[in-house]
Amino acid sequence: MANLWRFALIGQYWFMLAVYVVAGTAKQPQQVVGDYNDLLMHFVGYLVAGISISIAYPRSSWWARAIALWLFSTGIEVIQYFLPWRSFDLWDMLANTAGLIGGLVLALLLKMLVQRFKPIG
Image (tube, rainbow, N blue to C red):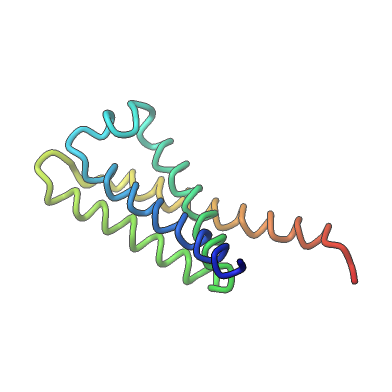
């Protein structure tokens, strides 16, 4: 049962990345994810990604998780540069970076909070 739970925790992260690839390469992303504030969506998306990777890979160092997500988000932006219907945007990368750092920090704070209230013995 523990292996199934581990698989689910890792699976939720990889599923999220797949959704981000689809949304990041769609011809009309507003049809995929809706038409909201673009930078806010980037920030919140990578805030969730920071929490997601921390759940999937809790024993990985924070910097390894940060680098993995930063490389992924940068990769999506680079791919968008080569897609005629999308564009590369440094502001998107900044929002992604701020969001992933926020997500990693939030995950760390939640971990500390859970450990604080963990039963002793």
